[in-house]
Length: 195
Image (tube, rainbow, N blue to C red; front, side, top):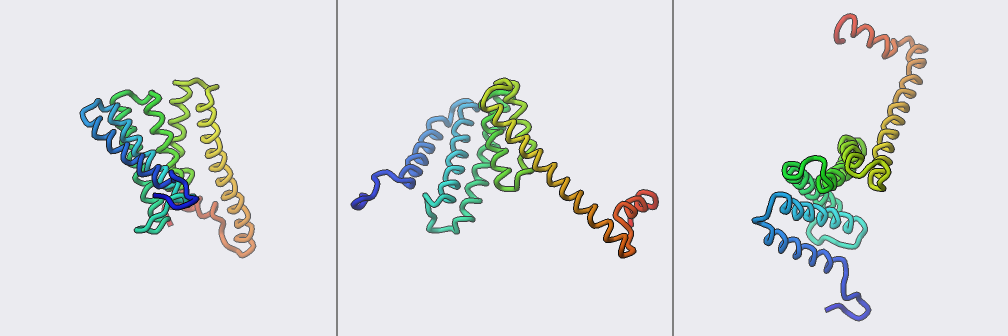
């Protein structure tokens, strides 16, 4: 029973109700087709993902674990569920299906969150190609996928250019100090074998 001035329905109650509904869904769909079971597996991933986001935003709290550790754990659980749903849908419905691409989208996003922007690049590309084929180039979800993939490619290019520029700044210093440049060392290695 909430106290005076407290809401009747809060984030924890919503999470508990969603978790209970997920358990009931798993029970009801146990003997269903693989594609139907994948829906429940995907829903489990969504619930884990949402819990991680709610923990980050401070809407949910953990009494047993450090919040950052629980966020990472929930994201890893979500990734595992989305990967399972992807495999189930790909095997039963095919790669080029709207259900399958939902899992592809979430795998890309979670790899991005867990391992960095470039980790999900191949999955973002896969999402874009599937959405172009299924929904066309002008569909809002296809355009969103294209923006994300293009941004990551641009970021990767910018990082490569910055790295290349920093190497060019180092070579004149090496020359001034009488040291051989990396390019000279690379030429020697190509000619004579590893240093």
